[in-house]
Length: 206
Image (cartoon, rainbow, N blue to C red):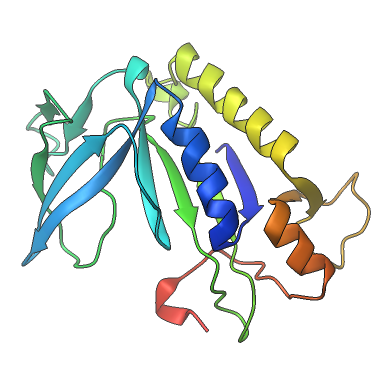
């Protein structure tokens, strides 16, 4: 599954947000309201700020979004106009992005966090994820235009960051999975700020 491990501070987050805002083929999916596990979602072209949470990014050229039916015998409902919004019931409270179920390979996922979970003062691990061609074998490959944008995202991340080994003890870059530190995060890491290795979990934030 394609992924990009990144480290970013709140200052860096504005750089990421601005770049995504300017990508005309991508929309943010935001939570309008939540009450008793009843969610209202809406796609928007731009955000004024981003918070520590998970976001879904819809690549509009890749096709429609859908609401999973929860029943293999009943087809999913199509979201005809994500910019007008839609509703969904989920089992858990506090979700910040929809569940898309069989809408594979589905939207991209972006988790932003600065406050780490593994020790007080740590820099959290942020990341971009996507299912890509994971379900190609069952006839649900990623759209080529979605792959094109993912590669564009990769280029943006790599030219905007400092590449570092994901795990500090792995200094051989030929074998170490790489992470990417945005400018303010890279400065803080260089000055001694420790960073989380594992994915961010807001319930465990230090």
